Image 1 (cartoon, rainbow, N blue to C red):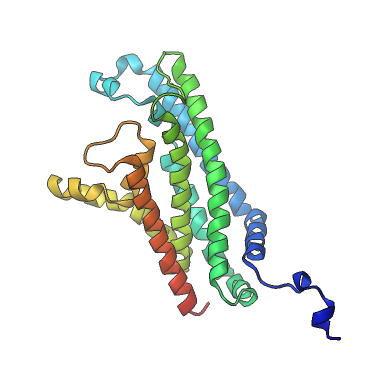
Image 2: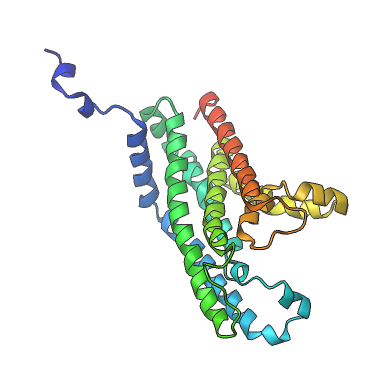
Length: 271
């Protein structure tokens, strides 16, 4: 009787996707950078949401008529997502480039020779954590923001048209930002390069597009990743933009293409 027949199949230490996911979860929660970076994202989301709402309410009587006419109480309370995306994007890159920097990626890929389960596990674990935490932060930011606005009768509620979609949309948008970070981190394998690429795609491309003639800008801007993804957070659809869910679908496609490129690179290149 051989050892293989004595030891039950479930106890032989086979590499399964579920076990790789569990391994990546242990890695993620054991890093200090995870806690501090996610905490920074939550503080940015909730803190800035409250501050923007409070100061808007306090200065309401001094605001120009046009600004009052276009006032969106939901967007004001969710303004913190602009800064939160920086923290989430950075952590998404670090999830994978941190292992390349320390050389731990060799151990990970030796334990999982097929390689791709490692990438899928990292993306799934980080995406799930980012979605849960950022959705909670978005809801909290909305509630504290509306509390600050309600004193001047400027607030809204989750039952108002489009509000729930915007609040949940902020969490979804930040989740996909994190997945872009994971993808670019796997493609570039360098922390500084990965972070620069994420911020270049999300923040620099829209600025460069503004330098184009207005007719070109209107045609191109709506397809840029950040513009397409952020449409979900706006209650009122902006001119020359895609419908909220159409834009978010395109944003997800960008992330899927980046992850597919990362998968090809991971299979073809040495660690």
